[in-house]
Image (cartoon, rainbow, N blue to C red):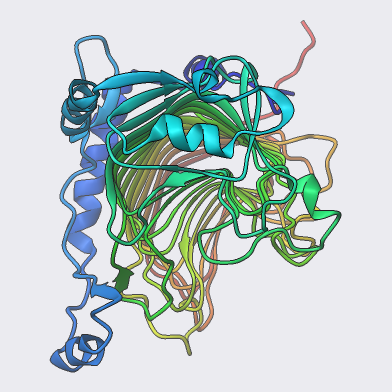
Length: 521
């Protein structure tokens, strides 16, 4: 059984995923083409109602803090490949141009040692960093060592550059309040642009809170690295340790909860997160809120503390694409021992994340490897979600989902789809643990008013105590318009799929339970 520790090298994820799916995998080009075709096919069936005039007037009075989310049909997954077979979202060239511009705009380099910084893990270096950063247009170099600070604020056109994870460490000072960020941009409300943070470990120093039950101060605070209202930003080659809330947060100025169909103003956009590690986070390792055009690649999040939540009710995810997020791409990431490996969601009083595309992910011992839901829009008495639509996920691995003390009442699942419309899962391999007691629970659940869902090329094996491989739930809040194609299970399953009798427009094709093979000759 594969195991990923806290310091797993996420740059090996692509190779690991390829090795674990090798018996069933096709080329990246074929995978991308199949997902694109399925996504377009699904779009023909998935339509969303338009907002009424009354609804537009209802939100007009809130327009200072939020903007109305318009529904529009997403026609493509927007994945592309270059001549070196690298996969990326189509808009990445715009971000690359801005990265080159950032370096052109830099006027000087500064080493924090020249401003009195001492990397001894004791000295307060807040003033040294402030002087080195100045008004921006600078590369601030941070050498090897542990540099204590009461928080770093980065203006536009700034690069904060260390010597690498575990070599350069920034640590939040013992006297810092719970609400402090370790590193963030300078102007959350007026906004900043072209900021890069690279090559270091970020330690929020949760131990300074002396065992307090809850480690976060609310909204987008209490995190290792937060970009709030940043246009063009890069988080590269970083480790986030023991954050009160999030390891890495791509955010708006404030999180707002003013209703489904709204998004906060001051969101970040065009942000790339690559080669990140995170563990010990109080809520999520990587999270996004009310922001768009985000690319998360080659990163590994594991082992949350869950301490920003009440004990036993910690919705602590490795990667969470949350309220109001829009246009987000995830490539070759991994998660381990979280509540959710990847969760795409929203709270009941916010817009759902929409137009999210995942290619390649390895989830190991997460309670719910992949969890897509819009809370508060699941039951028949709930309002229908206006925004929960457009997810594609390709070339996924789920290894031994398990129960967790983080969320004590949550049953293990490889995949759960709730409340979302227009979801395509193409290529998912689920490897169970033959010695683990799954208590008759299904491995994959399509439920709670999910509609227009396609599962294609799904392999599920090594579950000896589970229920059906795929269950489509019925009842008053039943799923609808579900297509299951190419579902292959090993001989341990007595039932591959369980589709409730009242499900509308369910299609099942190429469903196979393999026969037990004999090892005798």
